[in-house]
Length: 370
Length: 175
Image (cartoon, rainbow over all chains, first blue to last red):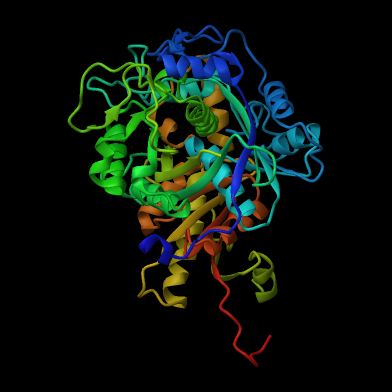
């Protein structure tokens, strides 16, 4: 078979997810998040954390109160990591030091990440700031290192809590949905909404312990098209999907679910649909797809980790996440959207989770049952 | 720039095939403007260092065969002037222009560089140069890219290197 003749382009070891922990608009824990996405229950509500009186949009998927990013990162890391971390590296996806913009003399993202790694007892840290693919890039790099035997275990953590600066920027860019709902792949979609996410996953080489899932494959590709607009034919994302499937030795017919990036913006959803057809052919019309941003919002640098955790939880539970907010079909987005709570099919032991970002950055992670 | 210092900046298994900085001389006072980027010199300086580096590639190496090039940006503080401008506007209630949205993350200038030079490899942003070099080496080793533009950019300076896999040493060749 062709797949067996292709060089592996990865190290030989299998990479698994040993543990995961999350905080979202639905509070602490995977179960409340899974219940929300599988039930199609959006977590959007009026923003009370800061003043949005001057903004066009008024809602976000934010947890009550004003949770502290450092405190939540430490909590999810502690919950996921029941081991001595003194020989383990932390890969941390964040926008930057939250204090940086207002105290420029004393802070850096590098120092912020080092502080969290030090407080949590890690041997070292690498901080990722690649916008909406920061966390998936961290997972891909960690998986590649573990597969090659360069690391036994890496913890990937990520955090974004809805705050006034990014909210103002997205609002000024007219990227936020003023109707208060995210409607991925739907006619009448009007943009994205921000959401909280802090998460941690423990990646390690497959061993004797029963894991939650496998990181079966990963792929990255660039659009080389525009500062922020997606390439309309989706070929950068298509290359990422193809690489992830090749690395996982996965056939298209083995895919049971795709957690799409699905930002809810007109151009991006159409480009992502084109990418799915370019990579998967006509099968793209038959594989269940949803964007859970319609439920938990867009968590920027932490979004890809939130969606990885959702995808793993869905795969394990057999419950397909719902593409909420749908109004009517769009000819540019002809996909088999999950529009109501549904069990996963018995076939299709793999799932893809896709992310795209400014700069034409695209990632695909292929998740396999353990 | 000495050859020794250049070699030190390459990751294990890779070789620097082109290199550039901003500033490189006293003539480098104001970087060429970058359409669509306002308020801050971060992205214009990063783009200029990248342009110089990639231009030197064309004359120094074989440009005939298409290559997949990753764009990796390392920055400890990112676009600090833009971030401070946004924070001040939010705190004082001043209006924000839509262009600031587009340059709010380091990916933005990476996207400009990738589009300008048709670089179709992965786009990665990290907070330190050592991590960027390590990430570049692994992307090349795993075949995600044939080469990597590693751009260390801060508010007033930038350093770009183009990395490729070190060719296998021929038997009896010089060390």
